[in-house]
Each structure stands twice: as C-alpha cells, then as structure tokens.
Amino acid sequence: MLKAGPVWALGTMSGTSLDGVDAAMVLTDGTSILEFGPCAYRAYSRAEQEIIRVAFGAWPGEPPVAEAAEVVELAHAEVLSRFSGAEVVGFHGQTLAHDPRGKGTHQTGNGALLAEALGVPVVWDFRSNDVAMGGQGAPLAPFFHFACAKWAGLTMPVAFLNLGGVGNLTWVDPRQPVPESPGALLAFDTGPANAPINDLLLMRQGLTFDEGGKLAETGKVDEEIVEAFLRHPYFFKMPPKSLDRNEFTRILDVVEGLSDADATATLVAIAAAAVARGAEHFPAPIQQLFVCGGGRHNAAMMEQLAARLSFEVQPVEAIGLSGDMLEAQAFAYLAVRVMRGLPTSGPSTTGVSASIGGGQISRP
Image (cartoon, rainbow, N blue to C red):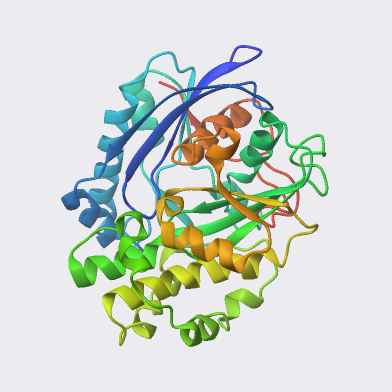
C-alpha cells in the first residue's frame, strides 16, 4: 500500500505515433494534482520504430510481439532509470492492437519486469479491465484532464484535445466535484490524427513526420476528399467510442493521386474536420479548447482547427500544462488512483457500465 496523502508518481507514455517514450512525475493523492515534477524523453531509433511498426495489429503470442515487447521494455527501463524518488510507476506500454468489441486491447510490455528493474511498484495493463467490463478501454486520460482543469482553476466547461497517432477529445465540466460525477466528462476518439500523416511521409519521402507542418502549409486541401471521408460510419456512432491506429489505413489510398504537399495538407484537414465533427457531441458549449500531443506543433493542424471550430483553440501551455508530457503525467496520476482503489474510467469516458478502476499492480 502507498502511504497516506500525496505521493510522487512516475508515469510513461509511448504513443502510436512511435516517436518515443515520455516520462514524467506528478505529486498527487489520486484526486488532486499538487505539483508537477521532472520529465524526460527517450526517442525511438528508426530501427526500433520499424520493429514496433511491424507488430502493429498483432496480439499476444503472435510472432512480431516478443521483439517489439523487448524494445518497449528496454526503452522504458532506460528512461525510467533517470528518475529518483518515485513511490509508484504507471506504465502504459505500447498499444499494438485495439478491438474492444472483438479480441480486446493489447498493450505490449511487462510491468512486472520493470518493477524488478526499478525496485518500486508498477501499475500497468490499465485498459483490459475496462474492456472486460464492456467499455472501450480508451481514452483513459479524461479523469486526469478533469484534475488538470481543477488544478488550472477553470470554472466553466472546456475541452482537451490530444493529437497523437489518433485524436481524442475530452469535454470537462470542472464545476462537478469528482470525475465520475454525472455530467463531469464526455470523452472519445475523434478519428485519425498524426498516424496517417507520418505513414504517408515515411512511404513517400522516408521521413517520420512533417516537422512543424511545413510541408502541409505549402499544400492545397482537397475539400471533396475531406467531405467524403466524413461519411465514414465511425462519424455516425455516438460517443463514447474509440479507434485502433490502423482503423483508417485506407485513408492513404484516397490521397494517392495528390502531390506530397497536397496529400499532407488534406490529411491534416481530415484530422481537424474529424475534431469539428466530434465537437458536435459536446453536452454544453465551450469557449476554449486546449491541445496537447505532437499535433499541436504542426502549424497547419492548428490553423485548420482554428478555421473549423467556433471556439478558441490554444495549446495546453496557455494554462501552464505540458502538452508533450500530459499523457505520461496522466498515467502517473492514474497509477495512484489504481493503488488507492479509485475509478479510472466511467460510462461517459469509455462506455463502461459503471465507474471502475483498472490496472495490474506488480511489486518488486
């Protein structure tokens, strides 16, 4: 058991954009955020990225998984070893496959190995319990977004947008007492974000991403393709709902005839248009949207969001948060909630029938 009161927790995130591992510390009692601590980043090499990429879509026991798991575990052990003073670690692992209404959800990486290596308890496999109870298993950051809104002193409904491989939105009403309160949250995946842009550039130019959105800013958006994409059945589902990274792999086929710049600009516009479509589900209007994740560094993406949304769009740094580390911080916070038996997801965030906790706890 953790000691009573606030504890320093260390969280990690390795997203489907495959850039690397984020790690960050948070001082929390599992309810409130008291302080943000040090953070670190460990990039994946091109070779490591390719090993993980080959395993996308694979399930436990399938051939590519073991090698991918080894890459993930070693990278996490390396970055986590740079920290001291953590009383618990939240280890998300690397999502390889996500099919909540079918095979389940698969985040590779063994938290028990990390617990032994680090000498502190590790909370991991955060999503499986939610899926087993009928939920989507994603997104899981919303309970942390609620705590962030409280920490920032916000008093009216706002939204957080994470732009990783996939985009996800969290609508937050910070006037509610706790995240599991009815009406406190609504969360869901919006659609593709950085993943298809990165895949396109890797395929066409051998680049892993469009730095700063420079290529997209030189291109012309094909609005017919954007409108056609929004007719995909996913956009007619009511939230909560979630996606696998590879759900929209055919998206690259629809931009095949465009130049590199036009294709990239159109994929950016698709991601922004998917967010705008998602915002139609907000339970009450907002005045501000705060963006985190790698996509907020893409100037073309931020411009498209501003053009397609009717409210102010800002990076989360506008309220003193770290857009690069927010998800790692989220899993630090969620680890403490798991250790204290508090819920980590609920009906309005993952569609699970009741607010529940998740995660395995491995002790050294």
